[in-house]
Length: 359
Ligand code: M6R
Image 1 (tube, rainbow, N blue to C red):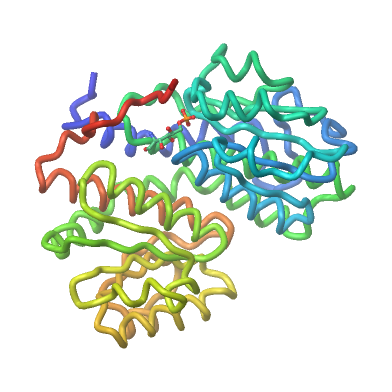
Image 2: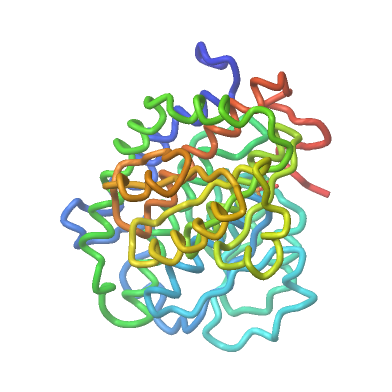
């Protein structure tokens, strides 16, 4: 059952600390030394020169997130929508690892991409033991989110990013030969993430933001790096359960076209990573403010400077810049949830959608 919550989606949003704890526990230590990913012992990824990630929907956004994590660790990586993989990908070279990401393990487009792959090695990161993709791929990595009933993927995204964070660090060690320079800080931040997510779900701030912008008809989401993946995911969640127009962009993209749509009627959610790229994102936010667009910054740490520029700050606990996106995403899940609830939408079963897209 829904365990006392109005919807499975809200229950599953609240389960994220537990889901993340399961994804991370026993797989690394707070000292950030070890990465112990089930059967993937050190050396498992020797000879891997590049990674192709294939997925759809929310899982594609996790793939984009992982692409950024791998690339920053010196492992060339590209995320593809599964449906585009066979038709528009250069032939795989030796040393390519194809990683499918799928909550259900049953997504037809992703199964087709894996079948079309000629890579020596394929693996799937999935939530479902024994699913079709586990049979199609050479290796399986479980994301351990627990059963997800709501059509809107929530805890599976967080658990995917946590699991892929560990995988990125494992692949880096094997492919490059040493831990990434920032490994200790990154992995210890990962172990703190479950508690930080708990603080976000308990804060209640997202509901007030959803109320403040209840009358808008178009919502934009921007970010860069991992924050770009989160911007796209924030927009997907918002549109699929509120039925309002929502679009995600990379922050720099706006001035190349979409800024023409920005008015006082278009709230923009800006994801800040808490790293050096925040300065550029703040520049993009000022361009939006100059056109009268209301801006909600989703940001961690010290935000008093930011608060002078934007209309609202949805704050998250401060963490490693590569993990801030997970916390921002939880805030955006909650904004979408409350916006959909105000509109009386069928949150757990949005119109026209199915949990598992097997056609
Ligand atoms: O089961 P999968 O992760 O392969 O599903 C892929 C998408 O259909 C899925 O992520 C979808 O976009 C979400 N349910 C949207 O919230």
